[in-house]
Image (cartoon, rainbow, N blue to C red; front, side, top):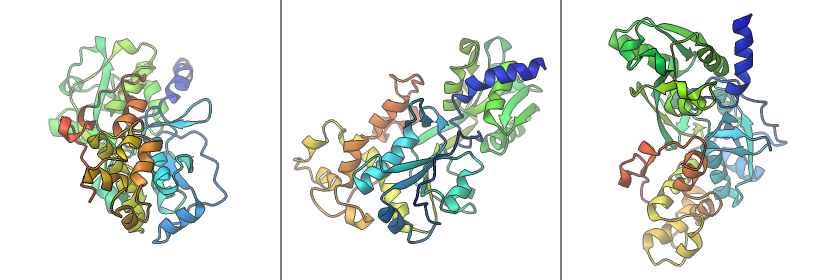
Length: 359
């Protein structure tokens, strides 16, 4: 009874931040209210259905601060949310032309395949099997992450090897669980998995002390570590045991729709490369640089090839900003998470973000 009471006491705190991991299996908060015009199953007409509906239906978590989270005022925020808003800005010149639907990890793929949502922007890891057998079409990566393990500072655990025969809390039914199994097997390290379906219970169990460590994406460990009873008593091991490229996805079936989502993401990155922000985009409209003119749609007809207006990128930047603005607003130094960009920098600054040419 003492253990159960402690878990119940901690769970509300843990619930406030759901895993940022690419495969978080948390139970989402109450799903968004379905609109009067539901999404259509993945077909070649999806693109036309979205335009006639005048709204994008976007599947998110709703529980992940910095990625997608519903505040006390009922408003959504986060990188995943801003991707949805950017899509709406490109299509309708209105970033608010979005209906968000909260999905947990078990629901997310079915919701996309059956047409409950038009796009999944929900901290989902891009994998080969999801790209093939699950039938997803991924857009470019919006956040490069990696899985790690958090332990208590006084545990004397400094590396994976020190976790031999130790208990590790892990969420089942995710790549997180599989990654841990693979890495420990490869190293010949035996351990005791303490497995739960619900991410909130998983972290509550670690907080209670029933696990020697807990594994999730590094971004998740940073955010969750900040709300543990004694955050300063925990440390994240340096070893990264997987790569977790998180990307939006659409269902296979409408090439035009998939291309539109893809180039919306690229627009955020390209704008940062060109130095175009929500604050100065108007000034760049008079630029004589051919690359900038094509990008903003003052020259050429690139947007028409996507079924969008030629100034679709300018719409995105005006309403949502470039990638740096999106990142800083949700995860940057002025936020509680304060996550260094690291791999999520532009290629020109040593990161992995890169946009193909707009021509």
